[in-house]
Image 1 (cartoon, rainbow, N blue to C red):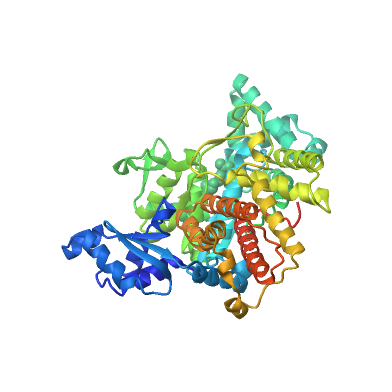
Image 2 (tube, rainbow, N blue to C red; image 1 turned 135 degrees about the vertical axis):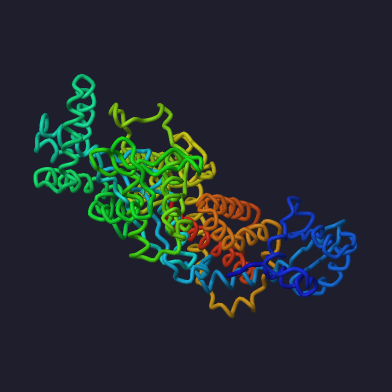
Length: 571
Ligand code: ARG
């Protein structure tokens, strides 16, 4: 992996015995004002360790490292060592890496094949797969790809909400008002209708709630009729979900959802009992979490039925046994923060020291411009409809703008869906945000279409220049002074910052770090494209500029790939 900061840290380390390379690397800064240099090293911390004035240390260090071939200039300014690196050297290193690594540029092996579970999407069966699910689905898919890229072995789990008292309600509603043909024609819409009706009727007749509870207990006990209905609801729902996953190009390794744990619950309950964690509370069993500042966790109801949290505890234990995970990541909204804190604490109390490798990656809510959504009231926006509308509107834009494409349908799909994903992954995940059609499909803002368009533009330059990837060694013989100008060098720096951005995204479980980085690359490329003429007559100059164009294009494509977005060759 190219990492100029690390190289600089290595050079500095030879003169600073007190600090290790990692420590130095973390201290190196990129000055806001480029006239100060490309990198700066502050000497305040060393001053304390060496009991010397920081400026004196900076001056000594600057003198000691100035001769290295990496630099064109090194200057001590007050407490800082300001370094300007040799664009030729940087260009050679980075371009060689991109040519050698191609689609793998930015990859790392820090994961060393360790198993990482990424649980994401996990919608509830027989309920709409609505716009609210888009975040977990898209963020989770990207985190999975990022961890793969960092050398982990990821396991993608869809923890379907396919169990719980709501199925009792659904079963009762179907028996009372249901009709097989309607369900088969439009499963989720119909089942949703039953669910809404159940709540309306239950308000008038509370007996319905008892009936529903009874039906769920029967389901838990494996009664044939209830199980058959439940299985049918599940199959029909999954068919609809899979349609959306196909549009988003998402696959799972496992659909082991809540129901999968129904026969694993008893053992877990016994274990908790043995470990003295369960207390009686009017017939129900709870774990007291007061010493940890949390409300008690309800583990079984007074009728003996288990809950969402019980299944999460069972699932984590099962996953540890089955996958021996290094990390077990849950991409679930911040509304469930307390739920995750509770059950992860319970695992800890059970004595599982791996409880701290269960990680809740939370995120804020998405609302539509029309207002937020509620399943119960039946005012829902289906994710599938949002994606279809994005494709439709993109098709229109393609026609209006005369976009260059051989296949309008395919391009509309890649760009429309890419735009929705890109907006999801644009800001830090914890921020709430409002979904906006105007922003999503803007070709000029910091959007998916903008980045995809930049990729296609670079692809077109490469086609026109009849570019082929040089064999790595041959880059040493090229004249890279042609890409040492300001905008070319700024682009190069963004490209070599990519591997580090991927690492940071993994560290923070934050795909938006990648999103922002490829926006920077796209902007830097467009500036280079406007400032410089790429397809010049001079063969040496053209060769160098095409190589830089290729590196920009490949890096954008790799970044988009990590977000789960395709990179079109034409647009
Ligand atoms: N099905 C749940 C919902 O839609 C999300 C499941 C989250 N995962 C978990 N292991 N609890 O709210």
